[in-house]
Length: 332
Image (cartoon, rainbow, N blue to C red):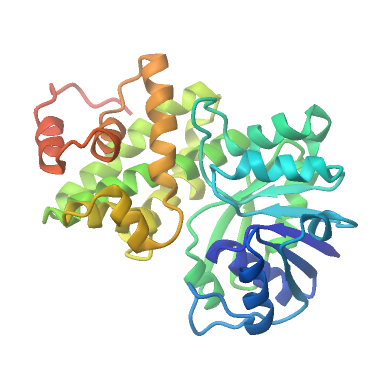
């Protein structure tokens, strides 16, 4: 099987290496020719020190090479880069094979999930080709072979099960779930709550605070998910609660780290620069804020994160505002 893989960040490289290790031919695309040259020569990603990819893995900056004659197309680009990258795919003739989305986010202004962005760019004829992979999974642990469980979904059950077959290994377990939007939505929204948890820890608050943020954050995710027709029970699973836990509780999470750095006094731009990778929660919180505002759905934690990043709100003032909100009966 020949696999085209778009996006050579740490997550893209980790999954591409996993697939190459299973014996598939993988052509990994990056928009940076120098990155392609380095990865081809070293087989090591700078964000994954100590790990060397094995198997038939080739890195290229030529989109045509990545999409010609492939049996599956997989992506791990940024939310912001999703539309321009798939526009390039379309310009090279598009694809007629399954398309697997592994990035997590919601497009700004349109409010589209990333699978919906791909559908809009490539056209309705590709609907039954599109699937996704999501769940609690740090690249660093995947390349180390640590036990990991994630979820696959698709508009077409056959593609969903194809993804299970494609990615499953003795240490990387993939569960099918037919709720495509629910799987994608949980993975996108948890990054925002992780930023809030990083801020909380950076301000010196304790586990009680973080537990409250995670629980009420999940409530916000569920409230907003109705706009996308998600099943509430999906958000209690691996792609919702599971991903929320791993992102909010681990220092490996770049979204958590981003929030922690802001609480320490760095500006959002300085924090992004120090992390050196995309912070999807900083992008998606704009999308979520737009969705909540338009639908008149209160999402106070998300709004606080948005105001800290884009409104220069002091994190301590944001906490004070959250604590002063009127107390209502808890509804789940």
